[in-house]
Amino acid sequence: MDSTTVNAINDTTAVIAAEASETGWIMHHVLDSNLLFGVIPLPHLELFGIDFSITQHLVFMWFAVVILLVAFRKVAKSYSKSLAPKGINNFLEVLIVFVRDEIVRPTIGKGYERFLPFLLTIFFFILVCNFLGLIPFGATATSNISVTAALAIISFFFIQVGGMMKNGSYGYFKGLLPHGIPALLIPIMLIVEFLGLFTKPFALAIRLFANMTAGHIVIYALIGLIFILKTFFVVPVSIAFALFIYLLEILVALIQAYIFTMLSSLFIGMAVHQEH
Image (cartoon, rainbow, N blue to C red; front, side, top):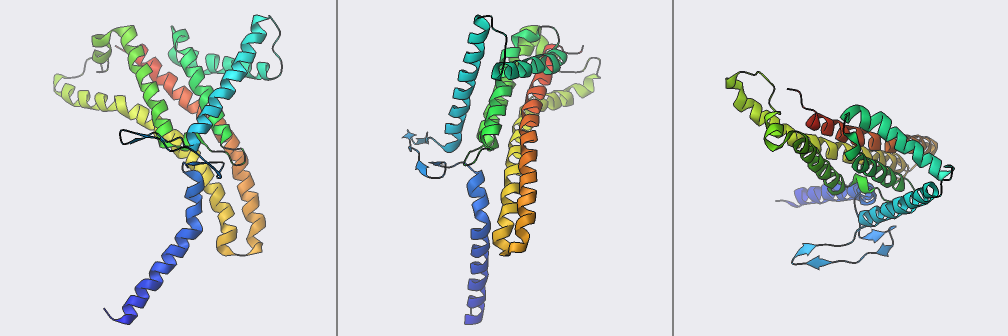
């Protein structure tokens, strides 16, 4: 290999490395980190070769849990004293009634009460995690596929258990097959319905993860144009569009909590009240 070819390869490598250094910071801010707020190191824990390290997303999930415990404990105390709800209590009551009357009751129907606590927990946990990711130096735990997958697995458990509690184990799985299909189609439908059991939670996990990640990437990419193009003329446009996407992310945070809860409730309702 002559020196010209070597120099060309080195130049190409340098260009790629420079481009990666200019854009790699976006993923650095979106992905999970061992630094809290970007500066505070978090402990590294390992047991039997398994990494149990505390990460930024885990800490922000703890923040969400603490916020919910404090807020709902305050609401519970106000009701125990027979006080009229006001302020944050009134706001939370509106959300609870909305989830109950507009999501859970219409999609599950009779017997929805036993699933309401779980669906309320899912809704408020996702909502708070989404909003925590919008504060400066915050982190969005729901943009982590491990977090959304765990939430989807929990929903999958409630879907299957709810269906079996209502119809019995044999009746539930038998009810997955459409009534009156030809015998020759039964093996194919068994495969399709079996795969369908797992595609539902998969869709829940990917939808929440993708939507919460995409918005942050777009915001960072718009801001990154300022440093990539290295001109002040793009600053007003980049900042304006980034603010617009940021405001849109507030709406997305609400919508994604609603969609995850709605679909989970819908899947539970389909499992509990099977068509025969």
